[in-house]
Image 1: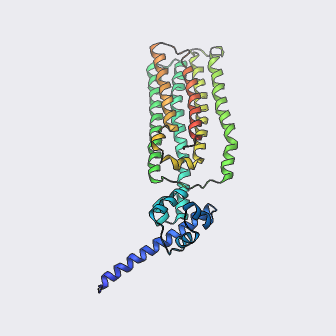
Image 2: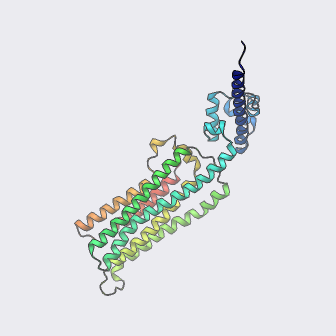
Image 3: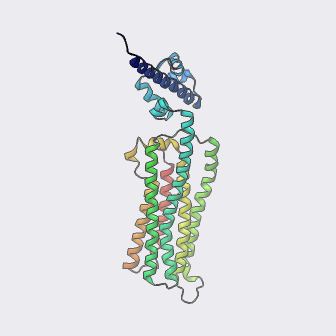
Length: 316
């Protein structure tokens, strides 16, 4: 059969692209194997093939079957496109930088959202302590709560979009970076809890503190809530920071999507919203302003504990 010049040219293009893909696959395979400090023999044992087969894949003289390609993606925590069509070394650097930037941004947004919701109560108490009209205090309270909720919603949506674009992130944090964070972790947790307890002492003894003319003990309840907001903020910020370094859990999150709805931001936001609802109901309906601030003591501690547990939890 005689092929036309056009057909011969098209066939050469296909062959060239196929050769480029095989060459790129071989380079990426070497990169991932060396990154894991793995020899060809060790990789061959994991895939149940011969060392010569691995050598041929890396040299670009043969191509893995689909089953082996999937095993390689699972083994090296990479996508099929990255393994076969991209420069893995460049893709890893880019994804690593984007991941760290995104997680830090998410960390700040969730912390800010939780702090704003608690601060809304503090603002209400401070205004009430100075005898400001109730309608003004209510408006200020609701405005800050709305902003806090919107911040949490935006943080959740941005994280979901990031996960769709980057379902798998290679491990890039060094052992030293993780150990440095782990050293500070207990101190930050103790700082958050201590700040909340200090605020509790102020709120509990508010009626015994000096007051200027026209000021009520509600002012010191407001000061107490500011301490709670700061303490919970430290706990949430610390918990999500620990979550950032657990890249293995991030990569497994896609596989366990249905089991991982209990995200730190969602839980903290729900806890504080429920606390706010309970605070408003017991205050406006039953006039329990002198004692209902205890709701925030319990919910704040619960929020911090949940954040720490969920962020440090290994997904199976």
